[in-house]
Image (cartoon, rainbow, N blue to C red):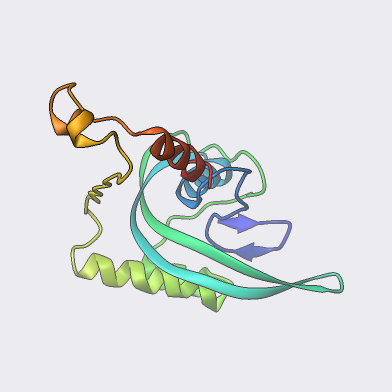
Length: 159
């Protein structure tokens, strides 16, 4: 995508909103900058770099994912004046920053290994539930969190 403010070709990216996790931000920013809704897939390499803003030097850390378009019109909303869908060789030449080519290379390598159409399955087990011997409400998988578990759950869902 082309950002006229910086006159560069780069990937969609942006800042986290307060309380937002990086995956949610990636989906939101992709929509805001390209007009497409996406479903995130395989994580791509992180990008760490320095930016100079006035007299300050800022460290930037950006997380990327492969993604599949699942909706949207492609209507550009703001910050971007052009989006191009290119073959990898042409995309590589078009990208302004070397750091953005690292994600492209990882994407091409993942495609060559048929790793792009994968489903992530995460099992999360809580450790702070009502004690088993005190639980009379049915199967163990329905055993609820205790007070400490509830507090930790609420705390971690906001970080």
